Length: 399
Image (cartoon, rainbow, N blue to C red; front, side, top):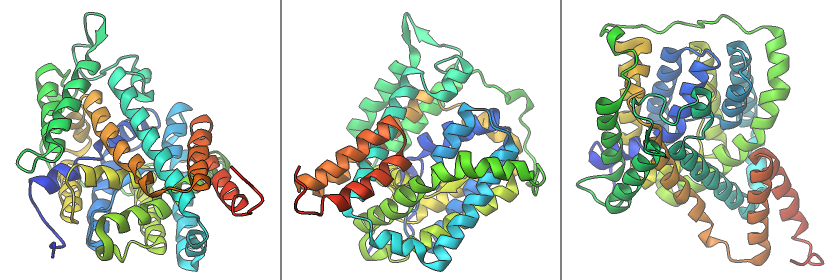
């Protein structure tokens, strides 16, 4: 029987597997939306530790991507983002405590769940490629392919492509290597490149100390912030959170860990995400969730126990407590292309969960959700998938 907690190279490598999702959005929301770096990464670290302890299996911690992407793209204020963070916490708490989320989960067809997983995996892979070629939102904001490296290209080719290809080849060769776990080797390669070619932004001001977090560093959001957040952020995010971070995530956890993931229920995930969002709100951070893509990333790179949660959570907490906002200086060492490599392999792991869908009608639902997601967003894809899945149960409708 596998112990509940393991602390070894595989778990450590797995704990780093989802950095490609967390860091680009976190850095973007700090730079563009003015969120508090210390509070943001402290809430991520504490949430990792808390959920690992509670669930007893590997659990992902991710930004809410619809909110993050839209907030960065439109340069929303910190008040608007934090209002969305608190509102998402309240909505998820109500869904969990009332049992409404269980009803939604019970009537969610398997084809819809797989459609969400395929769509999320595809989006992760696409984002990974963008990070390698230099076209992600964060890179476009900086107008640089590798904002924190002194070298931007080798001849006419962006340096991120070379770094990304090297990282991808390494990953392919080491993916099942227990002595040299792929995730650990690739992240170490990234840090080495950052130390050699990095701009070392902020290194001169880096100072060890004890930095305690601020409580509500931006004060309480305005009423107008809440009104704006409901329609611009919360309503578009909610279907994606329910579909991906609750239903698809619980399904994936059962697939990976079986009986050990008995606490990973729809109700449990809703309530812990609510706690994560409310904690992040008070620390000036970003809305947090448990994405299925994050779980796939941790698992693909070696995480098999809750020990991975404690490792990555402790790293974030210690960096914040001893470096304060200087944590960004360390994070800037990782090239964007390395984060892209992690996303590509995590996305492929999640997308391949559709292998157990064989019926033509079910496959049709899966690919329609993917198509709608690519054209609009995952929230709309989920809602369309629900309607289509139930329509196709009618025998008169043929595909």
